[in-house]
Length: 185
Image (cartoon, rainbow, N blue to C red; front, side, top):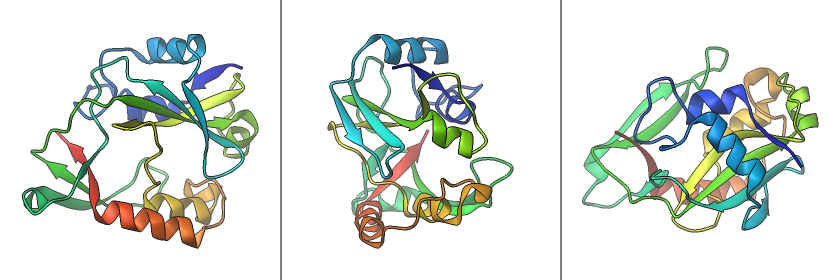
């Protein structure tokens, strides 16, 4: 099985100007090599048959992706409408500023199979393409953001995957994201 970093993931996980809330201490090429050379501790099923998550112990100093919302930090939440690329419509996002989470214990690359990436207009040469990565304290998937679930349901032409909305999964995601938020340095 071969794994390749997609251009979409490369720009999000390894931006030109590194940030404290992206993958640290390795290049995109080193990240891709690591995934191809080290078997995951566990493989989790993703939200659709074409999606898998590989669980790896964090070999970097990358910090957890999310922080619990508490009475002590709620005042640090920010929000704005943002798009992940020029082609996508902006959606409402929120994040912490001035909060530093612990170093993640696990990295969970999110993989799509070659067929799905071709359907989305992002063909790859490998069997699997990395489309994102979760940085977590436990070897478990963080629920997909509700806005991402909605974008996926809108279809490939709107930057999604074309997977219909699962109302129960959406409600679980809302419960998680009401009590947690991403962070920015």
